[in-house]
Image 1 (spheres, rainbow, N blue to C red):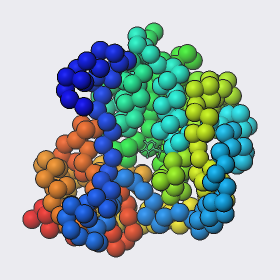
Image 2: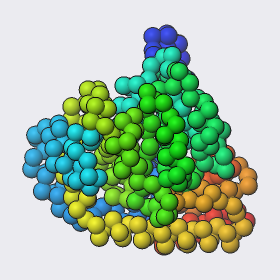
Image 3: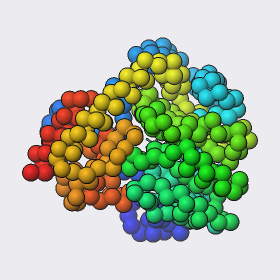
Image 4: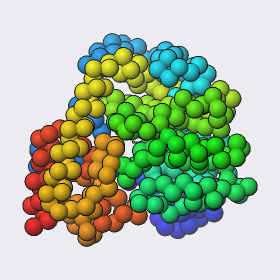
Length: 370
Ligand SMILES: *Cc1c(COP(=O)(O)O)cnc(C)c1O
């Protein structure tokens, strides 16, 4: 499309679209290898599970292939039952999404429009501004405190136009987290007409005593939506499946705008199978814990700073512009993630991989920094 065509189309779009830039995903391995003519690169750029999916998932997906000519169950009956069982809620409280990003987008589409405000922190997950802006809402971005959420400052920015507040706990790309006490105090003082999204994409990795499972708060806060995903600890990023937990009436509204078949049938059987494999989940958590220790130790040895993280990634302070380092790492066959678009131009985010991958990253980092 030529610029002049774009110029003519922009005035026809929803307010906010003109200023949007597409989400930049991590570079696929195949693309990098083609560009560099190499074959053994590693991708530590998208916080994916280095163990891959559970064998139970592979079997369930294979068994579902003969039914690919059928539409999926639009209501996601079995998966919603399984999720409801996991959280001790009713299936009416579960909204399935094509990834949890889809659920986040449903929230924006239902509650945001021009004239309303969407509130989140500096360094917040990119989908919050994208979905909010696409809905035409005004973005209210609150400066971070020690790279994390400044909840008091966020509370002070709530006004009559505020419709949705977004909080990732832990946050991506910083790995920072909020205790149950501080988060609960924030939710308690939030007016009940403001929807509070708590994004728990990295929930399973967190091993801190006062880290909250906010799905247990749903009974007290009808304005709360807790989102979870199968993309990280469950290792199903490619299949795109996540969910929201909320009051049934809130779920009812989200379901009104949800695409009828937004979660495909392979994703549904895979997610259901993944929930049943506690051994694989435990292995993913344990590999992550060990890998995080390895990365932190290695980064310290290199004399670099980092943001302490409870997720499956570490955001490293290079003390200099990260773009050149990222490019140099790519030439070593190591894909990491620049986070300049999150307001962190001197940081690089690396996902926790298998021991040999972490080792390869640290060796490459040392090489490109010297
Ligand atoms: C990875 C991630 C998600 C998950 O997105 P999916 O659409 O479920 O793959 C959600 N929120 C945050 C903060 C994330 O980092």
